[in-house]
Image 1 (cartoon, helix red, strand yellow):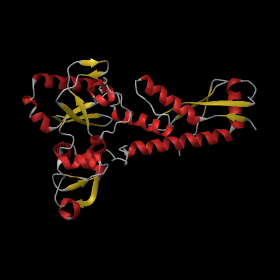
Image 2 (cartoon, one colour):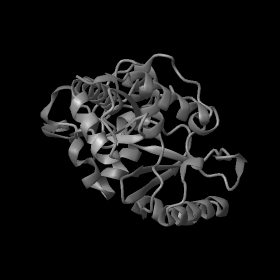
Image 3 (tube, helix red, strand yellow):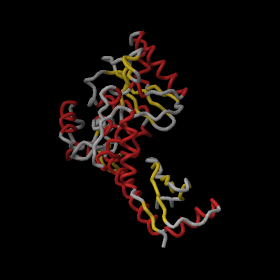
Image 4 (cartoon, one colour):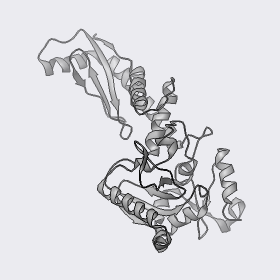
Length: 306
């Protein structure tokens, strides 16, 4: 039986640490904590791609009341989004300037909202100047939605959520709690939380529902958070990646003869008596894994995740 040398967890840690350190982040030694850091950073960013822009009717109605510099930056963000330019320099200072890979965006965890700074120049490479005004947005693969312009006191202002509900209710469809409404009594009978109460609950890692304008009740649009503040989707994806990598290592160690035969067929050489397999990458979106046999340089076919 062909002996297979592979240790994919250390390989995965090296990959993630190299990427984050290269961007200036301080990283955890533990693989699980490091993977969570990596996924948090990825979730907080806006993947660079061409997106159309939709303004809420609320923001459009008061556009003329905004200062000329703010209107100019909004127009530039819209142009950049449509063109597929990088929007990440506009994002949170904790991400771009402070390089805090552990930061938990509690507004995103609750409502799926991100905020962009509206400076008209860079204060440092990859960091737009901070501004009192913020553009609150929610985005998908194809569209960037401009919710409203506010400030740093608006993290838990239900008006932001209500603007989403009135303009793009389809964005909230997956979070709608069927059969639950504010007029059915119980904990939702009194309507929404006050902003200061919602903030306290978020900081205490207590998940909250949000009541819409017509009494509909919604679970956290951003998936909610664990007791340590980590987004639920980040935690779930981290577990799936670790499981995928572990299962792949077990499978490859049992498939030495088959892998060696396939490599020999590709190269025209005799089958290697021992294989040295190295994990090169894992795509967090679809869990596609790339593994190479280092002696031959041949990529090893990895079965798709079940």
